[in-house]
Image (cartoon, rainbow, N blue to C red; front, top):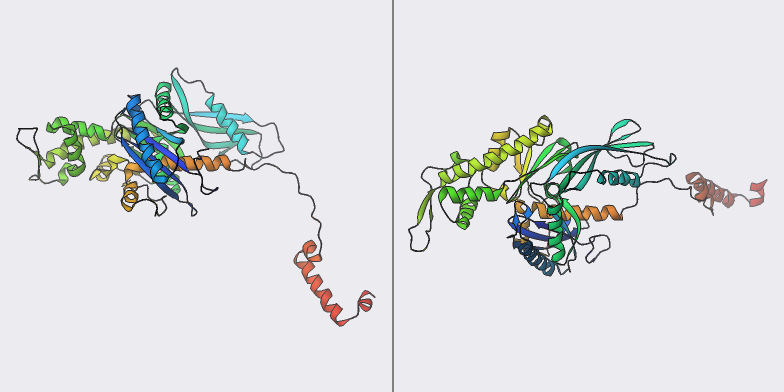
Length: 449
C-alpha cells in the first residue's frame, strides 16, 4: 500500500497529492500514536497546466508535481514513489444504484469479502461511452429484507442488498491525471474525489450524522458533498471558483490579473454593505502611466455578484438532493475561497442555513518536525483537500491491513489444566485454599477418612 518508508510498522508514511487549478500541493504524513495525523513534510508549486480542475497542459502539470514532491520529500526525508491523487472537474457525475448478492454459505456470517464482492459488481455497471467509475460508496444495507443496516459484517443472512452512491468521470480526464503522475516518476495508489477528501479533514462524524453540506471553494471549481446519517448522499462539482472572482475584478476594475488577485485577497469582501463609501485603494499604473484609484465598496460589489452566483449553484444542488430540510449542521465552507471576508454571512443570507469556515487542524497532531510558520500555514482552509487526501490514504492502508472481517472459526481445542484454580476459576482457588487450611490442622489420613 502507500508505504514509502516506515519508521514504525504501525504507521506507514503516506503522501497526498492535490493537483489544483491554482497550486499543486504534496503532503507527507502518517498516523501518530494518539490517532491524529502527523505531517512530516509539505511541498507547494504553482499550477500552470490545470484549468477548472482538469489537466490542460501535461508538461506544465508534470513540472509542478515534480517541484512539489521534491520539496515535500526533502523536508520529510522520504523518497516519494506512491501518492494518493485528488480528482475534480465539471465532468464528475454521481448516480444512485442498488445491488444484491445471494450468499451460498448459509452457515457463515456476512464478512468483509461479501461486501467487497457487492462493490466489485457495481464497478461492472455499463456506463455511457467515455465515462468511468471512480468511486462506489455503499449507503444502507438490507439483509434478508431487513432494511436500514449500516454495517452488516457479523450478521447471518442469505440475501445481501445495498444502495450505492456511484461517482463517475471522463476517461480522458482521469487518464490525463494518471499520465501526469506517472510522467513525474510516481505511481497513483488511488484516485480520490476531492470533496470526499476535504470532508475527511474538516467534518466530524457527529456533523455527518446530523446532516451537513461541505462546500470546497477552490481556484477553478467549487466542490459540494452532502452527508446525512453519516452517509454521503450527494456530490457535485460547480465549474466556478476563486479564479472566476479574480477575472471579474480584472475586467470590472480594468487592472492586471496579478493586481486583481492581490485586491481580492487583501481588500476583498463578499458583502458590499460592510464597506465604507470613502475607502479607496491606490493601484500603481503600468510603466509611465498614472496610478488608479479603486473604491473598496465597488470592489466588493463585483465580488458579491460572482459569489452570489456560486452560492445559488450550491443551493440548487442542496435542493435537488432532497435533503434541504434535514441539514442540522448547515454548511461548512473550506478551500482557498473560504478565506474571503464576510463569506459565511453571505452564504447564510442566500441559503438560510448556518455556515462556518472549515479548518483542517482538528485531525492534526502537534508538530515539532515542521517549522512553526509552515505548521500554522497548514491549518488554513487552502490545505483541506491535501490533508484530506492524506487521511483517505491512511484509512485505505489501515483497511487493507485489517483482518478480513468476522468469519466463523473452528472451536479451539480444550486446554489441559494443571491446577484446580485453572480448571474451576474462583471456585477452584477457594477449594485449594480450603484444602491447605485443613491440611495444616488435620493429618492427611484423617481428612481422607
